[in-house]
Image: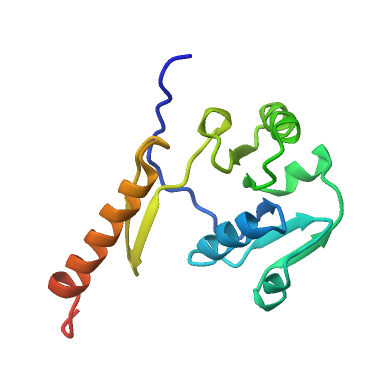
Length: 155
C-alpha cells in the first residue's frame, strides 16, 4: 500500500451530528477534543465511563448498526476492535460517511489535525497521521507564540 495522503480541509459542521463509538477512555478523550468545536455529539456504546455524565453529549446505550450512519457527517470509532472497525469502514464506504478509526490511520477515511482555536482563527497542524506527538508539540508551540505575541489586550 502506498503512503496515505490526507487533504487538510475544514468541514462545515453547523447543525451536523458527529458520532463517537466508544464509552471508554479513548472515546472520552476524543469526545472532549470534539467539544472544543461542537456540542452536536452522540456517543454510542453499551457501557460508559462515569465521566461522560458530566459532558454535554447524548449518550446512546446500545449496539451499532449501519443504518445509524445516515445521521452523521463524521464517525469516530474508539473501540479497538479490528473486526468491528473494518466493518464500520466498509459500511462508511457504502453510505458515504467519513470514518476515523482511533490509532489505525490505514483504515481512516479522514484524520483530525492538532487544532488551536482563538475565535475566529483556527490553526490545524496535520501530519498525515504520522508523528502525531510532534504535530501536537508544534500546535502547542504555535499556541504559546500566538497567545504571547499575536493575541493580546488589543485584539
